[in-house]
Image (cartoon, rainbow, N blue to C red; front, side):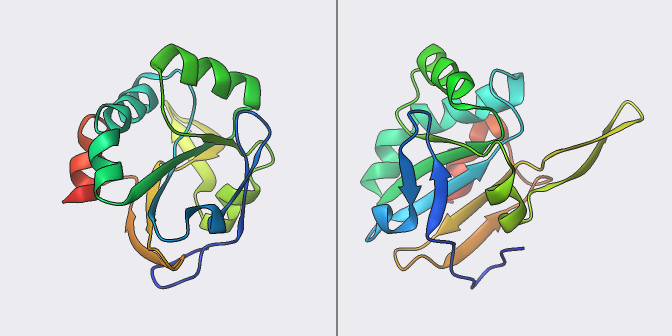
Length: 150
């Protein structure tokens, strides 16, 4: 499990177009690596759209944004197209990145237990070190950019 002060892994995964995303692609930028449960759900859409609506400000302040969920490339392509997202989404279908960052585990809804992604955002500095973690209980999906920049 990745903690504050740890170096993020070099290979992050493949985006919605099958392109490999690497940590070194963001050298000299701060990276917002956000893990979310599922494309097209209300909370995940609110979070992605908040980041989209504030994307130019995030970039102006030196941030790149990459989303991660376990849906496949096709699902991500639809989610990006529907919401006009300007940043890549990693298709972590085998949970490798989720497990490396400690965002995959047992959840419970209406008494039913299942495995899924804990909504978590990692702020990674220009040298690839995790500077800050915004955990599942802290994230405000409709105001997430303010939390990142705040």
